[in-house]
Image (tube, rainbow, N blue to C red; front, side, top):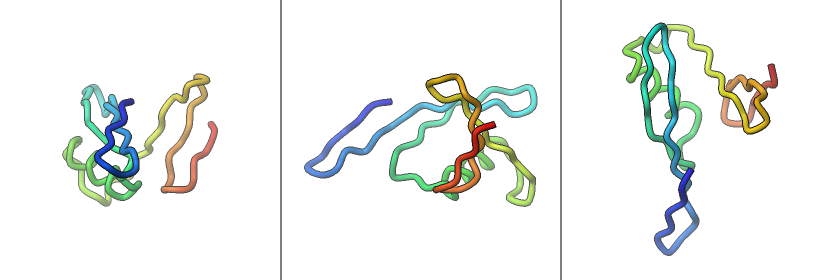
Length: 77
């Protein structure tokens, strides 16, 4: 993750690896992006409609799987 400042608060940028079916994608996100915008970006990248159920998970720095559900809600699996 990298941080860039331009006379204001830092905006963090990250490259995210995304696995969907048998394909792997890479997308770039930043700390200003909310859950809805991230979900829309994922749907566009995977070419699925917004009514397709998606489960978004990641592995944190302690190797724990985390389920993303909203801007505020993260579930340890």
